[in-house]
Figure 1 (spheres, rainbow, N blue to C red):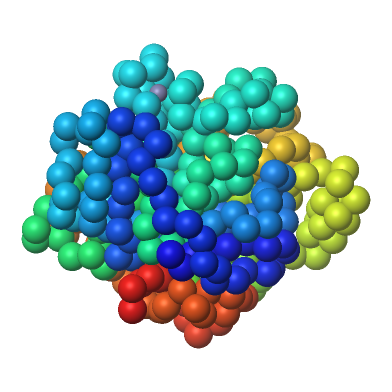
Figure 2: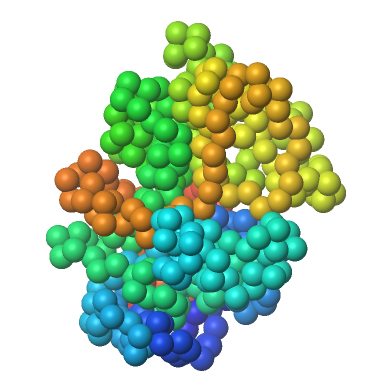
Length: 391
Ligand SMILES: [Zn+2]
Ligand SMILES: [Zn+2]
């Protein structure tokens, strides 16, 4: 089959690779009909996630059609149209039973490697380095889905492919961002990052009753999307003093909930960015934490900071004094998608949230390298490019 493979920093190529096969009775093979780029792929492509190998297939946000099931698969059959959660959960360990699927004890075959870094292994993720299991990703014609009864969900007939594809990752990550931020009716919420996850966090914050959501980014078209499709007020941090503006917007209190939907490649302005970038290049700091710092500073006393932007390792200059003395709560995590999918389909059906506008560029696998460059450089008003491997 054809697949989009990582071959080094910013080097993606379509290659012919063997078709995936059932390896375990609980596996299913899915014919991929749509597979989206995701902001977290950029960390792989830009070389910030260790343990990538030449030839790895990337991609983790996808839908498709079941073409084969292992003898242990009970809930799926050939021909089912499904969305597959990016994070893989076994369904049987303590974490999966507690619905904290991204912490699954059993789905990362390279858990020992991960223990060296994180002390304990976390769940495997499709197409997301050997540290996260070494699973082949979804930018391919076919993909093997382990524990398919738990990770693959039939898409209701009245929900289009263009909406369903983002229920794999972007929508549940945005939902969990708002949930971890403990958004309550009447809250003012600040969201850093107006990419796919940030947009979904904005919509989900409103779904939970937020009175006002303020989106912060530096890319004007993404802020315009946040205003138009997600109903946010917007701040471009290159034109304004974000901390002052947030204070002003909240009567001097600060936002109740602050969401970091950017993560380790954060940009900021001026000397702070140069400092972080230099430390990152010298490997003294693996992640740039400009957004996390600002979120902790901006958050009101007793408020909550929610981190869904991806971090991989160490960060520098976290204002612990503010965190402690302001009585903040900080929560983070990869999303537990399996817990949210049916409820998210319901919110989409009732048009309380709508991810469809994220699909700005339907493309073929062959233009993979260019599509990621466009996505990385934020050109052509791209929110997400979505591969259709059979077009
Ligand atoms: Zn993702
Ligand atoms: Zn598990």
